Image (tube, rainbow, N blue to C red):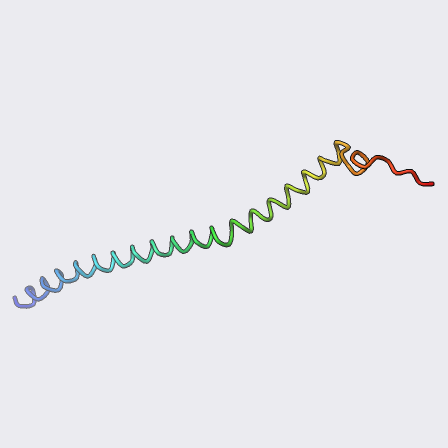
Amino acid sequence: MPSSVASLDTTGSDDSFDEEEYRLAQEEWEESLEQLQQLVSIVLLPFLGKWLGRRWSHLAYARYLRLGLGKTFFLGERRTS
């Protein structure tokens, strides 16, 4: 019988230990998510913005030239003598 009482005591403390362990795991998970959000906002978004900006500028410039708005439009045609 004493072993059953001892097992009840350890079971009760195991439940509190499990709750504490779960709380710590939850805190670590939330901290990891926060670090991931910081990584995305500090590293990946600026890199993606830079890449998309350069990509868009090439497309916009190609459209600009296709419309005939090159140097000759603004400066006129140069005559070579």
